[in-house]
Length: 356
Image 1 (cartoon, rainbow, N blue to C red):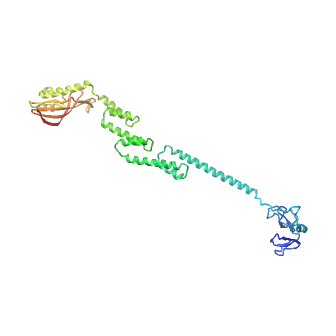
Image 2: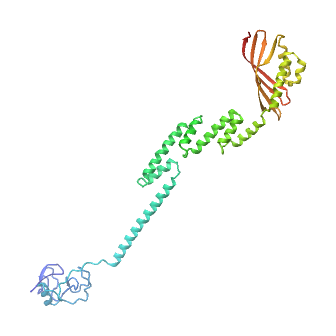
Image 3: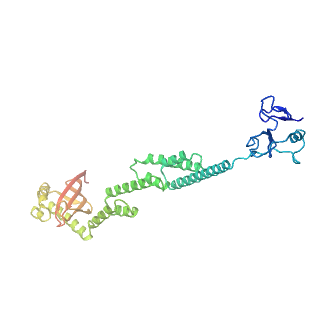
């Protein structure tokens, strides 16, 4: 007699038992052994639950074979060995597909992330917008470029603070210094425009040929180049020639000679109609002992006439009125027409002194 385990309830029973005393399943002539793993199975079992082997065609085990197995003797010269469970091939294929798909998806996302990172980093080259630097750090807080971007952002903030400190200045020097320190920044264009405007304001106030020429030399692409050239051309037309200067000086000397001589009849030849009455009055108010002398050579310039298309001369000089022991100094400003007639003459007293 041999002892085996019931294939139904796994209790130990005799091979001579007709049925299992524990679960009642038929034993005699109703058991077989798995050819792969050697497990005792009931007749009619199609698949071994231990190794998944197909046992539908396996014959029933004779009692003599069961006795030999229970005594430890090998079947067919070897002891049956448990078979490893095999995964169904569809499951294996699905697992491989999932692994490959997951790896590919991860690799694709990684490559796309690197591409986006490098593109955004390249976009910050020669970029001075602090908001875009802040956005980059928010999007890539731990990237390989984070330290560099933080340093560049700090520099941009320092530059921004410097600009805010000079933005409303009316002096040109802070803007020139800023541009020298930061030739490339978010404020380069604004700073150049500010320098251009302040230089033009200075030229307009000076209103000299030298000032306009200096503007043209300094601002090749300045906003006021056309105006500067127009004003420069106009000033060239206003240049007083030596011959014109001599004519103006002779006219002024003649005028005061006629006033000193009380030669009223000759005055209309050298003064305009609007100035004749004032000249006669000036001559009549001059006593016999008084006279006018010009103290220095007049400074002469030109300006466009307000009533004609020609130019008038402007002469600035000093006149001294001598009357007895007193001498009165005047600043004189005369406007003379292109026909060499005195249009206006304004005398402004400067001082009054006693002559020795």
